[in-house]
Image (cartoon, rainbow, N blue to C red; front, top):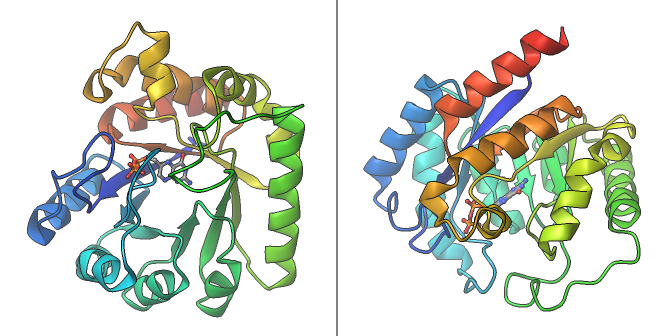
Length: 255
Ligand code: HH2
């Protein structure tokens, strides 16, 4: 079976690659629908940027950004809500989302209460501090242990669909990201579904000699293919049509 593709829809003024393009709800909904047409299995709606250095958004503003967009998209495509706030996750589930994409790895109770799936992502610190000298003795072992612990807690709390995500670019240097991709089999071996998001991230720009976010398609696809070939069951991407093609190819080779 082909790995799934989660399409990114940032309803924010300041996301690192598509910030400001979809703040208007009508444009956001239109883009979400186009991601579905392009083959996204899930559209991931976010109202707060997690990029390094991003300023926090207050709850009322985040609700105002995401709820109408989730409501409009949910009848047409599976919607995940990318948030770290319990109230935003709960409101999005009420509006029709069925997956909580949680970069704080803390909202499993909201997912359990709403009968939704849950993504636990690894990071250290918050967006303001996370790229200040991240240090690991063994990044693969530390990230895996953290995610397994979170996933077990969520399972105990009654979450039926659990995904784990190594958090590429979140409190990680380029070499940490590469190690996590190289040894993704360790995370896959835990038995939890693995989600990976490398799309347009800055380590790809750095490795390719300084390309800006919109020019990182090749690196995004190459790393998505590596992740899928190593067992990731879902990848998170901005360039959905190209990533869906790559996912189908990986699926054909694997089966
Ligand atoms: N990356 C970003 C946001 N959410 N969620 C998961 N599960 N995994 C990721 O790797 C991940 C994520 C960052 O990308 P983006 O949404 O494009 O940017 P921003 O946070 O600036 O809105």
